[in-house]
Image 1 (cartoon, rainbow, N blue to C red):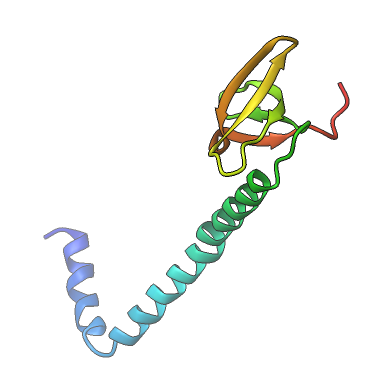
Image 2: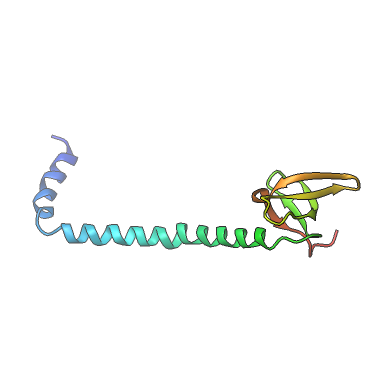
Length: 108
């Protein structure tokens, strides 16, 4: 016989009685730890990003997910996009959901 089977056979009778409540408590504790360390911070970050996108205004210097730096040139009333100026005579149409950062306060 293997040493692991001997240990498991000796440990099995001790675990048979009353282990259900401690298992439930451990599962709840693990879920609570995961919620506070992983899920809640991510939800908070998503809410801040959505608030930032809703508060965009003309003249804000922003960067997109793809790394394109530019200035907000036009914001349609109910559109899901913005017109962004990336150079003197170059404007592009960008989805609001692709804008991730504001660089209005950063001096170049």
